[in-house]
Length: 128
Image (cartoon, rainbow, N blue to C red; front, side):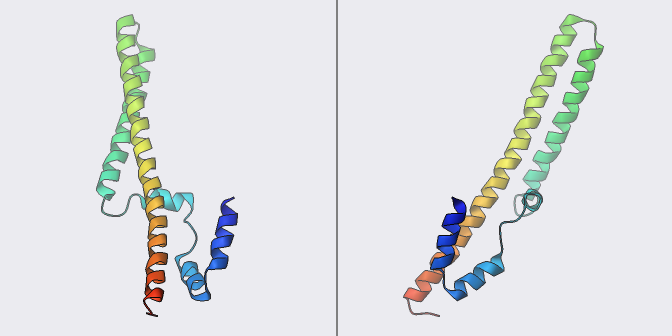
């Protein structure tokens, strides 16, 4: 379905616009997108979230280790609850990084549309 829309858009473009879109290139691959969230003005926030996620997961592993190592039922409940909380935190941090990557993809597409609109307005105004 998406390929059909891409083909229709490609047919509607003139040679100059096709050349410009070719310079922009295709959408980056998964790993390029994942690494790109660690750059830019909010990179420090992503690094902080990443490190907090690693810390939460390390705490989860430690809490699980203590959970299986204890013989006291009350301590097992405490370590088990702590492990669940830390695991949920690690998943939350990882999910927020994924949401940031998705926002980057959407912004990249919006910028492409803005470029197309600016070029269309320039043509209508009689500018080359």
